[in-house]
Amino acid sequence: AQTVTQSQPEMSVQEAETVTLSCTYDTSESDYYLFWYKQPPSRQMILVIRQEAYKQQNATENRFSVNFQKAAKSFSLKISDSQLGDAAMYFCAYRTLNYGGSQGNLIFGKGTKLSVKP
Amino acid sequence: GAVVSQHPSRVICKSGTSVKIECRSLDFQATTMFWYRQFPKKSLMLMATSNEGSKATYEQGVEKDKFLINHASLTLSTLTVTSAHPEDSSFYICSAREFGRLAGTDTQYFGPGTRLTVL
Image (cartoon, rainbow over all chains, first blue to last red; front, side):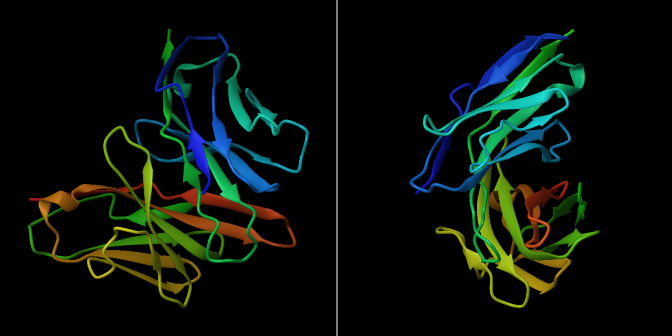
């Protein structure tokens, strides 16, 4: 079974600085998806970024980028120029590559609470 | 991104009553919807997976007779908590899977959640 581990329960960053959130996973599959979701105090889960395992290039979305190391099964999230609105719980998630089936559920890590200091 | 709505956002009910929570994908068809439960400061716990037109698949330890799931159309799934008790108080989140084989999209979008309080 696949597992996702986020070893940092809490992180803090100064506004405008850069922070990296860690995520490792375990799987025997060769192809899959990886995601970072953000959950602010409103508790609405928001997709931050996704990565297909078959793509070697690291995904980027504006100030958010990932460092995907497939051999090491590592998928860290880097937030550049941190803003107060980035304060939230961040969840790393794994999903099997499953087309049209009834599965394809996300497997979440326990989350990292990010605080942004003004 | 795609939008998923959830209604109600907050509900308070008496012990022994039933509560229905609706989850809708507003601008896409969702062949698969997921229901999660989240305890304070914890991660999301998958309760069940529902596919349009078929019975839901429940995770181990989740009572299917207590948490009734119906996925009547490609845009609507409902979760009914039957004979609710205080221990059912929690935050319930639905998620809809947007899958487009030709477009190569396969992403889960989440509803805003429902806070259930059982007195």
